Every structure is written in structure tokens, then in C-alpha cells.
Length: 467
Image 1: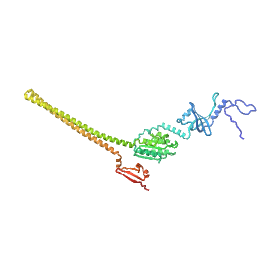
Image 2: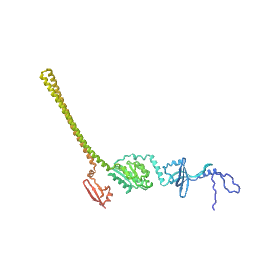
Image 3: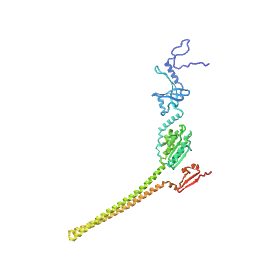
Image 4: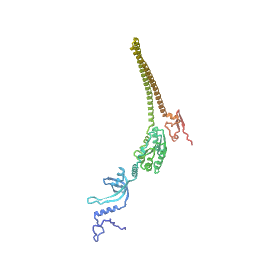
């Protein structure tokens, strides 16, 4: 039979001596025993305990809660300074949250007016499971934000209508289908360069970073779209990798992120130039111009410009003709006035000579000289007016010629942007029997018959796979 041993608490000296013949049961003072019990418990080993938080209560000095599981519960307490030092996101710890606490047993001995209490004194706390991932994500987000890695991508210029787009997504995934459908809706006819790394496993992050670096090294790539469907935080954890985020922050090409659903927020979303909730939204950010809408708008603007050009040319011609007529009328008026003055001078001179008045003769001589001078002045004025009229005619012809050349250049520019001109240069449009455009060899192999449109006519073809 095992021998029963009575363990004494160090520092708790007996209050009274034992009478002869009585059992060896020492008696202690309450305060002394309580203090010794506190010292004894605090000397126990520090451990980690996992459980669910219940009855969480925060005060100015401490945080109180119970840690429970199916087999038991312990009261826990934590200094408020230790709680704040963990910098947990708001609402990260609440009733029902599974946590891991670090600490050991503690005892408050109470006093004559205060009740004693036992608690598990926690020094640190972390979230368990996905909550642990959230805590790691929050810490890494604070680290990268402090280093300023969330800003470089957002300062990169993004073209409104890129010619070449890099796309990183899972091969044959729903995200890839959404991206292609979005490009078709925007009527975008540029070049898409695909990279299909794994997007969910422990080796995915470095392969995604390598795919992004390879696409950014292609000089023609102007923007990169990263897309993946939704999932748990563990499924999307590859997009929270620190090395991947640092790689994206240093790329020369802007990255558009569309990872997960609208409620998901990976670290790549913070580092990328633009964060989108869906692949369709990502395409709208990458190709900010709806090509079909802009083509219709350009055609309407070209029509208005053509009408305005014709109206402007006709208006200028009418104005120049009116100016020329006004100059002619002015010249005719001056000419009539001069002829009238000449007739008056001749009549006056004839009358003076007929009277034989010497004074009249002198006056006639003076008037004759004035007549001669007036004739010379009239001739000079006529020449100047004729020169100005000729200059106006030349300017009118030059303005009409220049305006016609400008309108011809605009018409040629508009014609160069018509889709038919692209076909005349040797390109062709391939579509299936329903009229949908086929943009890849893989899609062509899935159809039996194809229609190839050239500049002059369409040709029906059959797909023959060479074994």
C-alpha cells in the first residue's frame, strides 16, 4: 500500500504547536498560507494551453476570459499591456475563438475585504488554425507597409489600351475563362501572353513569382493580370508569400490582382497596382478602353468632322468672295469720284482760258498740275487696289487648297483605322459556324468547320489535324 505523504508549502510556518498525542496536522495563518500558496503556484512550469475563448472581458488594467474545451475549463487573465503589445486586429479574439496561450497558474490571496481567486496568468496569446494565419498575415502586412512596399506598383503608369497583356492563372480554370470572356466583351484584339503556374500548394509561391518575373522581362508586355478563384485563407496562402510580394513590388510592369472573392484579401492585393474583386473587374482595369464603343464614337466623330470640314470650306469661300466684291465696289466708287473731279477740273480750266483772264490762266495752270497729280495718284491707288485684290484672291485659293489637303489627310487617317484596311494588308479573321471569333489553335481544333474572312470575301474551311 502506498505511503501517504503530506507536502508542506515552503514559508508557511505552523501557528500553534502540536499537543502530545494529537495527529501531526500543522495549523497556519490564512494570510501567510495564501501568500505561500501564491509563491508555490507561480513557481510551476510555464506551459501552453489551447482552447476556445468564452466570457471575454477587457478592463483598463487586465483582460479576463475562460479557456474551455469538451473536458474542462480554466479561468485566465492577462495584463492589458501584454494584450496591447500583441497588436491583434480588431475583433480577432472574441467568444468562440480558438487560441493558444502561454503562461502558468497564479493565485490572488485576497484580503480582509477582497475575495481570493485562482487564474491562469497569460503572458502571450496567438490565434490557432486559420486564426494563426490571420495573425501572421497581419504581422507581415505591417512589416511590408512599414517598408513602403505597398506604393511602388501604384506609382507605375498604366496604359489605357495595352497592346500586350500578361496573364497568370490556373490552366483551364474558371478564372481563365472569365478573363477571356472579359477581353472579348471589350473587343480587345491585342496579344495575350499566358503563364500557368500552380496556384495552390506549398511550392506555388516561388513558381508564381518566377512566372511574373518572366512576363515582366518580355519588353512588349505592358500590364500583368494575376487571377485565381476563391477559397479559404490556407488555399490562398501562396499569394501572401513575402518573397512573392517583394518580387511584385520591384517589377517594372503594373500588376492587376484578382485573387479570391470580394471578401478575400491577400497580401498580393495590397502590393499590386490595382486590387480587383473578380477577373471581369481585372480586365476592365487592365483594358480601360471599350474598343467597340470607342470605334463607334470615332466613326461618329469622323462623320461630324467631315461635315464640319465641308461647311467650313464653303463658308470661307463665300466670305472671300464677299471681300473681293466689296473691294471691287470700293475701287469702282473711287474711280467714279476721280473721273468726276477730272471733269470738273477740265471744265473750270476751259472757262478760265476762254475769258482770257491771266489769273484764270494761272489758276488753270495750277489746276492742270493738280489734275496731273490727281491722275497719277488715281493710277497709283488703282494699282494698289488691284494688287490687294490679287493678293486676296491668292490667299483665298491657298486657304482652300490647304483646307482641302488637311481634310484629305484626316480622311486617309480615318480610313487607315478601318478594320477593312487591316484585312487588305494580308490579315484574316477566323470564326466558327456561329460567327464567334476563334483566337487560338486549340480553339480551332475543337471546331470541325471554320470561316476565314479576307478583304474581298469569306472562305469556308475544314479543320484537319495532321497526325
